[in-house]
Amino acid sequence: MSIALQEFAAPQTGGGGDGAVDSVFGRTGAVTAQAGDYAVADITGLQTSLDAKVAGSTGSTDNRLLRADGTNGKTVQASVVTVDDSGNCSGLGTVACGSLTVTGNIVVTGTVDGRDVNADGSKLDGIADGATANAAYTSNPAMNGTASPGASANYARGDHVHPSDTSKADKSWTVRTVTGTTDTVQSTDLGNPIVYTNAGAVAVSVPGTLPLGVYPVFVNGGSATQLTFAGSGGLTVVAPPNMTLKTRTGAAGAAVCVNVLSSTLAVLTGDVAAS
Image (cartoon, rainbow, N blue to C red; front, side):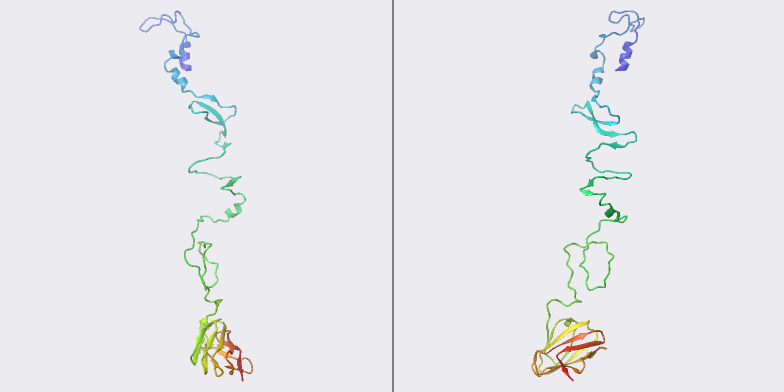
């Protein structure tokens, strides 16, 4: 608009030739534009240009970002957001956006998803570089192994269940009944009663391969039943002083314990016959 007004404000002179101007609004000679000579409608395109202009107040604070005022597309107003000459923004409230790429450091004084990042910083510092979200362990928990801190990066679920430790005696007894005249103590007898029901003599072998522990023995064969113990596979069975390696006779219900102390030694205790 300023260019058009300058052209009309310049002195106009008449002259010969095609398109020569002899007078302007009845004035001749050096004509100077005067107020009221032209209306906006008289200047082609001026009204359209004016209609497209943006109006409104931008406020009195330097570097403030503009924002729309209404929906006509031509009125603006100031905001509380400031962008300085170095591109630093201030005054932002909640920002809703899609993917966000950040170059440089992020300083947080509030919370992220309700977590205080400053307070949790020591926990975050403990995460190794390149750490990933580990998957749950999908195999059954191990049992009966040598103690180890482990090296797996997988985590155990809260509802995982360990298998029964077969190296320990179960809470409930498993009774093994022997009806014959010979028997060999078994590893599964550890902590479980062995009941001998033969009415006569029974020879019991105690091998050196048994797990260490107590093997309870009960006699339920009658007054003539007597058990005789002997070691095998390098193991020696001993009795207390002045006692034999036999159970006492004369009463059903006699009980002894075979206490395996090593692969070479077991000690009888309980209803052991005197020598």
